[in-house]
Amino acid sequence: MGGGKRCSVASCKSQDEKNGDLSFFSFPKDSQRQSEWINKCNRTDIFNPQFARICSLHFLPIHFERNLKAELLNLPCRKKLKPDAIPTQLLKTNDSPLEITSREEKVPAKRRKLGKL
Image (tube, rainbow, N blue to C red; front, side, top):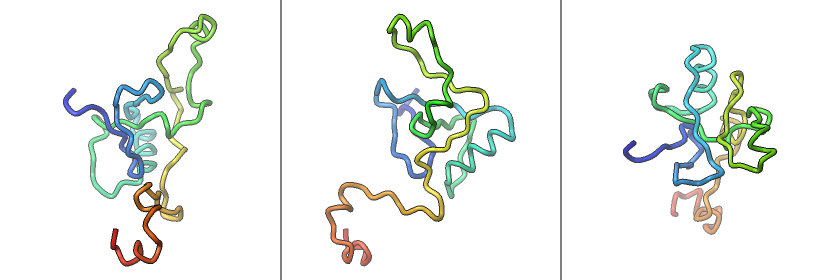
């Protein structure tokens, strides 16, 4: 795969950089669940869910199936989503504030309002 995987959630900057804790999941094939995932991405552009991915940061631990064998043997295990999992975490909505990057935090609010980063 060319440039690696990117998370499709609008407010997320996650990329596949061989981070062992971060996993990427394909959109469901079921059209109703796929529509829910697309809505959760909060994107204004059009994207193809066939190739899109959402990273594990947007799911709770209860959304994942447990691998008891790997847990008991203290082996690394690949995360697997439960069939009904819907992304719910760290999703920017219209009523939530924009995420602030570390660069913006250093710029005084008055200058940010004026667009002078």
